[in-house]
Length: 299
Image 1: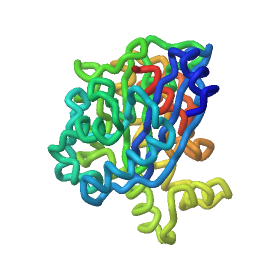
Image 2 (image 1 turned 135 degrees about the vertical axis):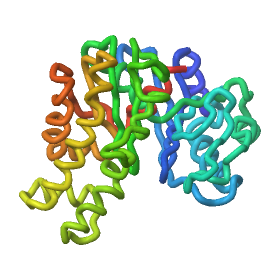
Image 3 (image 1 turned 180 degrees about the vertical axis):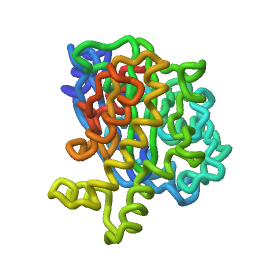
């Protein structure tokens, strides 16, 4: 780091080094949380090895983090579960991605590789970080807020004044929407990348990404519209009782699918309003910035 950069960092006591580890990429960033609105000063994104050996996975993560924060004094890392976020230990056994990290002291290994004290290396669920990021920039921060992230699966967070609620009769177990069921089957059998692609193929459509299916829906294709509308309605209908019992006044949908909100919102809102009629529904305001800002704010 140059002398000028060092001076700038010293003048920003609320600069945070954060990372978002996803199923295919890792993004590292420096976030200034001292501004009226948190802002990202610098970021780096690179592919992450998810199915290799532990050294390969952690090496691909570390390489990106060091490009952004070689002089970082600590990190807040958002990553998917199952993971013991307090202990910093991988519990990915039985999961296709990051399986080599099962039972591993991820905090200890990353601490040594990054050259930061283990106590300054913290972890947060990626969906929770996403939700906190979205809540932090909401025009009026609601007391009760729900965020759903849609991509390869369904992530979720239920926030009470910006803090995650993971237990109680008014949230699903652990606050995890993916544990919900539709007609006795897991929610992600109806709402996920693979579920939407499967339904589209069953209807006679070609093998396409969800983004391409959404583009076809945007251009009026009946099959694409039907598949997406059904998936989003079922998601909204499954979530509606929990949104209502939690007393959420705003629900935000994020993740990679949120980029196609224009062809997704109608089905989702219709499903939500079967029970939670008064909740405000919106698409992510921050998209890829959400987990980075949320991780910084939650430090």
